[in-house]
Amino acid sequence: TSFLVGFLAVTVACCIGIPLGLAAGLRGGFTDFVVMRIIEIWTALPTILFAIFLLSVINSGVLGGLLGSRLLNVALVIGATSWVGLCRLTRAQILTLREHEYVTAARSLGATELQVALRHLLPNAIPPLIIAVTLLMPAAIFAEAGLSFLGLAINEPTPSLGKMVADSRQWFQLYWHLAVFPTLAIALSVLGFAFVGDGLRDALDPRQN
Image (cartoon, rainbow, N blue to C red; front, side, top):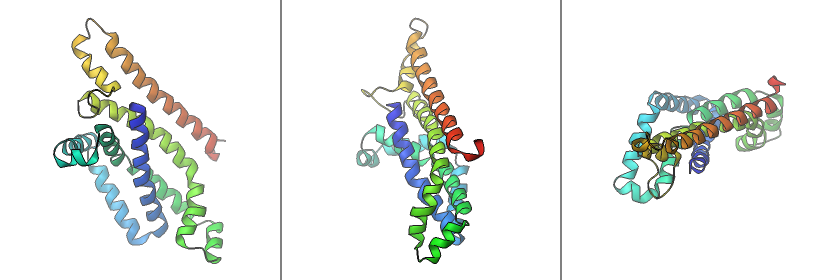
């Protein structure tokens, strides 16, 4: 469950952050101004408290029935609160890449802005984005575990590592392993994705070679 929520949350974050960063970096001007103000407002919000608020709103009332299962709701909320870093990175990459000669050549040959973005800018910005996405996975898994621990994320009968840790609190003195092993699973998952992200950074970042 934690891995599934992590993948879905990262997908949601990519669908929000990458297009906004691409538009801000490519168009500039008013578009860049609006996107950056949205990022500043979103950054000012306390992430965990805002996620708890969103889950409380979604899981109660009409929205809970419209958006479906709690698993999808949790992935949507985590992704909606995690896109800022991807947006900033995409914007920074596009601002750098759009000044290269091959972009000027493509425009001189009659390529539209969309063609320049999809054929030239975005493919060259993918390596650092892959690294960022890989490093975002541990944060999404950890966020799901924390929200499940508080009883706001995954509900019965779907298993969750965070919920396992929460349920084991009353039995900890007698059955300590009920809390230790799910905690170790969370820690190893986060550590594993962190190692993958570091390895991809070394492999894909030319400055590290």
